[in-house]
Length: 218
Image (cartoon, rainbow, N blue to C red):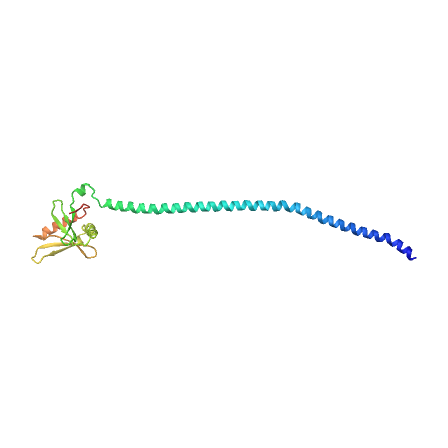
C-alpha cells in the first residue's frame, strides 16, 4: 500500500516543481522585459533632458555675454556723458566770456567805458568814463582783479535805479554822490561838483554810461 502511494505522488511532485520552475522563469523573463522596456523608454527622455540642459546652458552663456556687452556700452556712454558735461561747462564759460565782450551796436557806441587801473600798493580800482573821456565814477580799492570785475558788474546792475544814488555834500559844501549796491555797500564815488545841477547831470551820465560792457585795463 505504501509503495503504491509513493508511486502515485512522485509524478505529482515532479509536476509541481516543474510548474514552480516555469513560474520563476516567467517572472524572470517578465522582470527583464520590463527593465528593458523601461530602459528603452527612459533613455531617450534622459537624452532629451540632457539636450535641453545643454541648450539652456548655451542660452545662459549667450545672455551673460550680452550682459557684459551691455555693461561695456553703459560704461562707454557714462564716459561720453562725463565728457559732454565737461564740454558743456566749457561752452558755458565761453558764452559767459563772450557775453562780457563789447558788442558794437548803436547803443554801445554811444556809452562810455570802464578802465581798470592799479594803485601803488597793487590794489585794483576802476573808473567809469563818459564818451568824452571824463571820469564820472571811481570805485573803491579791490585786492584782486576778479573782485574789481565784480564791482563793475555791480555798477551795471545798480546804475539805472535812482534810489541807489546818495546825494551828499563835502566839508567845503560841494555836492557829490555815491552809488550803492542793494546791500548798502558803496561801489562808486563821483567827483566834486560846483552845483547841484552839475551833480544831477553826473548822475544822469552814470545811468547812461554805467551799462557799458567795454572794459579796458591799464
